[in-house]
Length: 293
Image 1 (cartoon, rainbow, N blue to C red):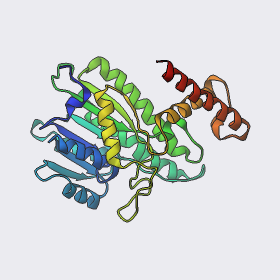
Image 2: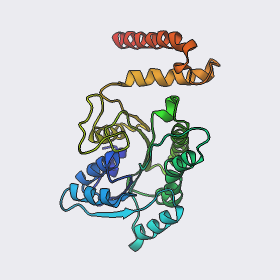
Image 3: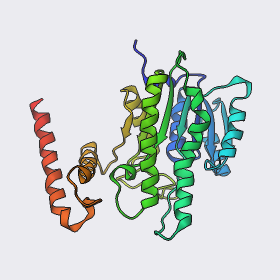
Image 4: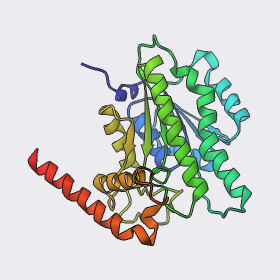
């Protein structure tokens, strides 16, 4: 039977997940636990980690580490702990991220977003990529990085967040290309959730999930399915936005460059009619293609 990326989910394999105290990170931890993997959970919130640990199945091998992913020193300390006794990672999920708002004069806004969302990933790769650069490894390994649709379609109003996630997309694409050549038994995946009910998006134990949002567990299930199909881009839909809508929005965004439009044209008055008509034509074209196949 041919191997797939989901072969990384196996009993006894070691998974390290950042932002694991809640949301998507915790849901992926639950997915790993269901396959009896050993879990190394990282978050900057000690109480969230404690709650996450108790929510996972009894008998799961779990260790938790409270740390700031923007600190390379703390990553190096974690590396020492992880590698004690010769241990190596099989799965690395760089998921930690924050949301914030600010304007063009707000230096702290930019530095805080980039420190966590961008360098929280860069630091993790700098420290742990050697675990995955082994051409002769026999077992499947995987690196998953959590991006955002805002890093692809680039909507107005949050430039630092969008730029951080755009950079994550570029880095992960390079990582996939490089490891495909040097370490073919390591798969790389860019996980891009849709509207997901998490702490970052306003979720909480006292609030009810909106009808349009997915639960984090649905994101983890979709990730597993796309990994089984060998996909790099895991662009999750939600209950309001389907894959075809996402595809049209991403196609229009790339068209700003190809057709020399003004940037972020989808939100500019002078392009709104054209955008609506063009995306409707794309929808009809997709329907016609489907009916003739």
